[in-house]
Length: 207
Image 1 (cartoon, rainbow, N blue to C red):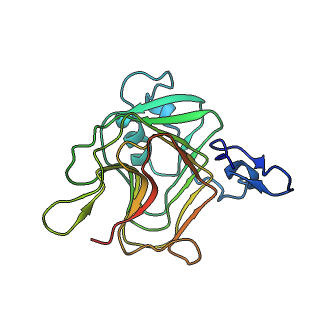
Image 2 (image 1 turned 90 degrees about the horizontal axis):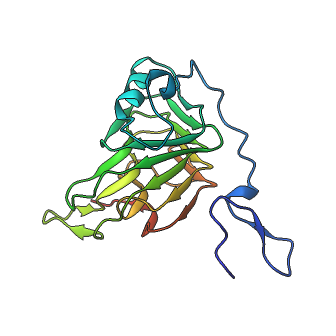
Image 3 (image 1 turned 180 degrees about the horizontal axis):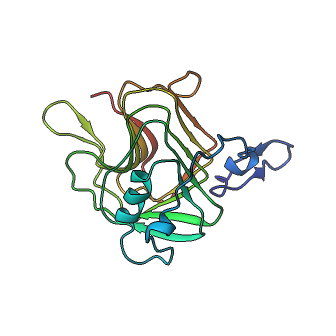
């Protein structure tokens, strides 16, 4: 059977079984609280420039981060740390293009979720290039280069209904041992789809 198109809902031939992230109802998500749109802080949705500062300014203003204007947002500076209790949501047609090069060393990420009770919903993440592969850095730490989302210790995380195309390093989403997979209160990773050059959709770093 062919792999379903990213974000689509397709029926397995000869059956009534539907597969793919698009089959899931993704409308069920928390209401936005005091949403801040990076576009209102100078972000460009034209696929040019570097929207890191505008995104950071929107986060500094308090409230959830909401990309409400369709288009491509380019982020070429790593490591946006999302405060606890803040959600990220994208309107249909929004692409977040992360262009940071994997340095082959310690982890870099577009968004760091490290303070608990964060959610990421409905975003199309795009990476510009791939890394060199998982390796040991000499201390026994499995280093996966550059991710699109990194989840730190904490609880109450939700990553739902996103697409990850060509993760910059070798994983779209990575985490330390603290959060666990779907089925408990720590990390809910559901209805996402991965494609392109990502070696892994999700990496659990055992350190």
